Length: 131
Image (tube, rainbow, N blue to C red):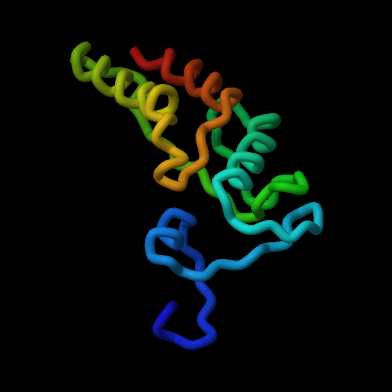
């Protein structure tokens, strides 16, 4: 994008910040112009959590709120619900839980939004189904 005058593209905020790329405000669902930021992504995710289904399949693009950034995404981990090897199962559970619980302490320094507590609670319920 930098090499093509007038080009417009989309990359995640962490990439744009690391590579010192310019980015723009977007008009959100409430008509407010908002710059991409960890806070704006967190606000959108928090609003998405209010009506998130148990399986967490949801888009958090264009969530309401004056401070919500319009293009925000969630990363998912696809995990089997049954494992024959108990040690393998526990290692996977421990890693996933660390990522959405204890590992969140590193999120903002890496320019990522923390997972809202309401979503973490849904994750707790889902990870408890792994046998």
